[in-house]
Length: 236
Image (cartoon, rainbow, N blue to C red; front, top):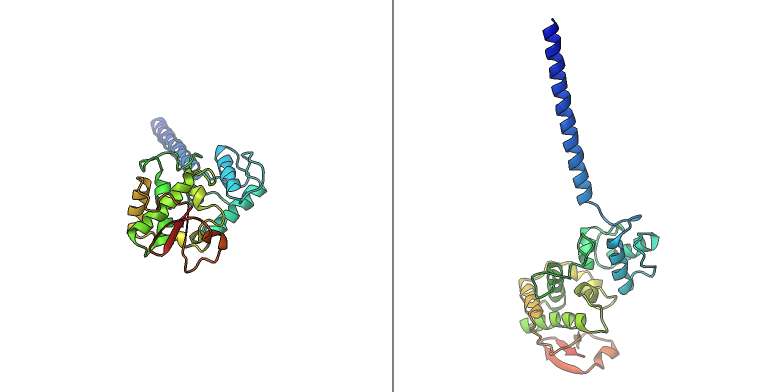
């Protein structure tokens, strides 16, 4: 009888040990999942929030202090950015919103490094989207030229110094306003983006372009013309 009771206690201890081990593993898995899913949202603080505020302020979406605190002004600015760029409007800087801003999930800039001539994978993807949305159906050289204009602006002191900054600058590209930038790019746009990144510039250094059949802005028509490719006039 004594031996039977001892065996029962051993079995109970083994079960308890297994339950404890399972609990530890579960806690670790939950913690890892929460860490992986951590997003900048209302109440967050840190370097990623600072980067979000800097970009949104530069692009005209945010007017508050760049203090690394995700308060009501940052929350509303993120929602404004999401609304204007065809993203889910929830005020949370999730992976898609961060990618649209050119920010990696670690809080750095997605355009700071990469295997695309000094640009990152997010820059390459965004450039291809702009080319496809703005120049789909244009001659291939015209597609490369549109990509070159974006990159020329990145290098120009009058414009933001990143691909995402140039693309999402308020009012800069109609494809951002009408949501065309969110469509899947045509294959030629990726090739054109790669050529533009590699230094091919059929625009001759242009920082503007327009369609003479649809452009109504007198200012853009007054810019010095460099060349015409397909349906676009490229100018300074």
